[in-house]
Image (tube, rainbow over the protein chains, first blue to last red):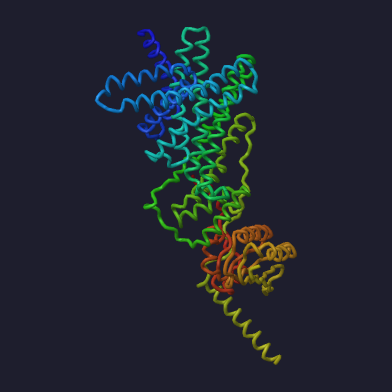
Length: 431
Length: 138
């Protein structure tokens, strides 16, 4: 018992090391709310519990129901002696609880995911492995996303898309921490422990963070669906777009997680699969990291409405300008978009749609696009930032201005007036 | 289709090799008519390859949509690269407001009278040192 506790503590410390390193690497200098971050980390740890509860349900044989029934009956006869509905308790235990529990466990055993897993791993076939691991990945991602959504409901932490990504990553790290303890405990003393330890603290932990980060990104987008709907020209009502974004994030995270888990499993039979798994994780992690660096993601879109300044522009002009900005953005006239947005924001400082257009265009001007950055890193010759802007190319006005009081203009006016009189006289003469 | 009427008149310049046209737009430029009507201006520009200046009389233009602003920018590019000038006369406040936010009024100034517009087009601005285009600020 004591050695079991010591091993648990040792594995906890071993799991804590990567957590400290990862959090330090990513959030030491970040303005993230450390208290909420800790709560979300604990939430991430807690998501392991329902998964174990489900697992427990699957692996519990139906025969144990008799024991459960006896425990309830013993408890009632020992402590509920003064209550006069023993018959009811007996009836409930024997005729309702017992059969129901037995049926659930029989059903669970018959369609047990653990059984599927054993069959799939035994078969070594992708046809069985992929859906099985996809199923487990789905459960893990569903629980992890629940942590972020609950925390956001309580603490209103998501004020920019990147907030959502960061907190979601923390939830993923919490989950990974708890999962690692169990893996380390099971693998302790085996030959493969060191390699398993290194792989899990680097790649599996990064994977959990990256998968959660992807969900966080889409959840962040869903929070600002009203703004993003206008910027991206999305059709449909905002609530549907919101739900679609959350679902999309969850599905992408689940699928990538499933592919990663399957690759790791397949690598036991086919080594190159491990390289694929590592490549997958590193790519997603770098992409998520660069995504966090974008200005558009850091833009605070959740502002206090009471502080919002009202627009000094008419609704119709606003619509016209939004259409123009959207068109120019699509035509890659990013510098022009930034300029127009700057002037627009002087008139309507709290317009989130314009703010988002501006930062997205600025990301293009500065080359903050994640995929371009990756290509530039790979290629020796960087890909130039494409910009089709026109306003910037033109020199400022080359016509004469502020001449209205000049002698020259007065003379010109007199000449024009004389011309008009001449024309008038000429017309009169014709008559 | 929304009603819009565009008329083009020659403006006497008294100068050789300087062509000035007065383009008067009356009505509303929107999605239903802007593509069709813009061809008229493009033809006008293509007929006079150099030294063509345009004065847009927008006194009775009620509304211009985003596409027409895009066309106006494009016309400016063509005219200015062919040594011409473009000015606007008497734009309604809503039209002037949009053009100001877009930044076009820095390129295509708005004047209060036709005389002022003509004078600006026919007289060269004093030479100023070329300022580099400002880079967008984060």
